Image (cartoon, rainbow, N blue to C red; front, side, top):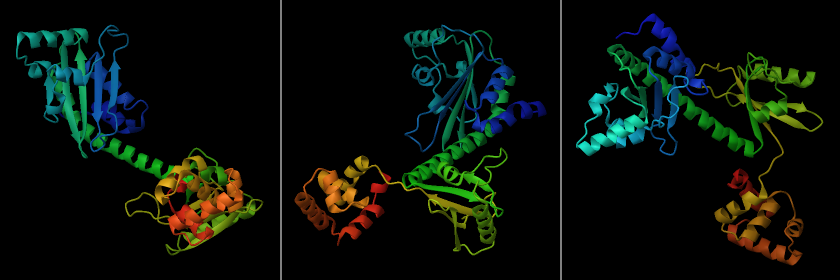
Amino acid sequence: MALGTTDERDLLLPLFTGLEDEPLWDTFLHRLLARTRAQRLHLFIRPGGMSGMPPIRRTIRVHGYAPSATPFDLEAFSEAGLLPYASLRPNRVYSLEETTLPESPEAMQRQRGVLDAAWVAHARFIRIVAKGDHNAWLVLLHDRLDFGAGDSALLSSLAPHFALALAMLMELRGLRLRATIAEDALALLGVGQAIFDPAGQAIIADAIATEELDIQNTGQSVGRAQLRAVAAQALNAACRELSTARPEARRTVRFDERLGKDVLLRRAPVASDSPLSSGYSVGLVRQDRRENAQSATPVVAATLGLSTREAALAEAISQGRSIVEAGAELQLTQETARNYSKRIYAKTGASGQADLVRMMLTGLAPFA
């Protein structure tokens, strides 16, 4: 069955525009429920290669339908031999009659009990496999009326489009996860970044860059940094220069004279298939932020082979305190603090306080 113009408008369009829906694919699933006259529609997604991620589950039902029905459970139905979802052939539409093959009267009675409790008499279901080994199951249920050939044909026609949308969904979620991880790690160091076009307009900005540069959202794009006139002009000029400069070129712009804060600008490393122009710039700002000593201490102890007290002293020294000041903060006498510092240098191989600070700042402690 070929999808008609109405199907493309009512189903395909919300399938692809609904990747950011909350809850997921809300319009698409409600329209599919109405189109097939199902009483309940269940979507179950198991991401491929992401064993630690929980499956995605969506349930859409006719308003007020069967409040006493047992919630549909894909795995429970499969265990009862009603819907062997893991072994279904991809893109083929099944009915209950095709998969309900009881081996004994007892098995048949058990299956009937599961169906009656869930208020299920008729079903259509399909397994869809997308690039990346992502699997999805669409299940339509009804307690009285059977589904027709047109409903099965519709599910079959939607399958390749759904597979593409599913692959796009998982790719987007993977990219978002990677971006969140990277942004979170930079935030631990007090680093914020924004992307500027050649005119100095911010296209993308994280929370720290937005705060530090006072970037205002205009509704159409992220907006401009709300800086004093001299700083704004300097930022605009730097972005314009970098748009045609060599990749290794750098510019710094002081955006806060009172606090002595600067933004470091460089050419954005844009991929050849990116929608962004190669003339964009990345602006990096940094807040005066260090790791929490309490969470960093066990990391320092584990990575540098120190005792807990030695690690606490090393962490305090790396934050700019002298040995005596760090010892006093940890309620150590001057003699004990100096003895600890000697053991720290011996265990780490640090040649002095500056070298120890270098080890701390280039290790894992700043990310603790």
